[in-house]
Image (cartoon, rainbow, N blue to C red; front, side, top):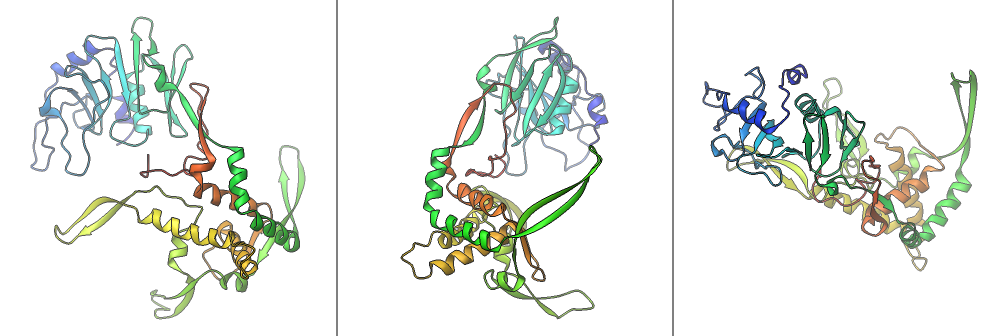
Length: 398
């Protein structure tokens, strides 16, 4: 659907306007058997824009019914006489009966979208000068310069139609938090791998090579020479550590030829890619002969397995006679993870400073419950999202 469709949306300023519009709107007549089995009242002046709907919250006949695993959800504290404005069958704006209040709601989806922003802006343009998203947060600016950053899934406003102003009803929904590393906790976690960190530092000191990078600085009209250090792991060296397998080529001219690649499990799973405990999954059901949506913990379990394999090498105690060999393997794995290499025909070249950063990221993601803390920041400030996917999440997308 083009964004020109959003420009045809009506401006609605209050509950009475929304109620009147619904009362004079004829429902969309069903013309095909596969059309939705609930009554649809179009919100747009163009009746073909069936993704924009309006309904009374207590009208069960107009309540969307989904054929897949999704449930219709109204905004908190929605009454039967409230009027809901719906985008893609989700009630994202609710005007509350007999009040000068409306609620902005994320609806049935897990994040704000550009479609939400266009919908809010075109309908509520009397109150908001701009609506957008930044770092997965909804950012709304009023005509007095006030900015509202929504980290929660909903916010209720009280409006003054004459003065075109809005005031949040519950300031708690505008409280913003961010994830921060606890310095004391990170030191404790690093100490568990202290021997490997010292081994890694020694290996970098022995194997690092200087390199020179030139680039032209257009601002200052000069050539800049950047000198740093890098560590090279040869292809023969890292292939002895990273498991490989033979696969057969199926392209026409070289069909039947075999060649060596990194084992599929280690191509698809890396400690740096931490999934949620449950991820969306589509599987074929032989009983119904259909593809069905579901949730699976397999990606998380595979991430856990590959991470614990690496950390077992990096935490080998000094009493183990294989400590040096295991530390060497862990060092090579770090270069492999940082290099993001899939082919076998080239050496790995890693910046010397990246080894420590990669090791920190792996152990902080694995020990996230210990090292991260969520702290409040100034209201209506857009928080950093750097660590949001480092912590353990229950469901992907939340």
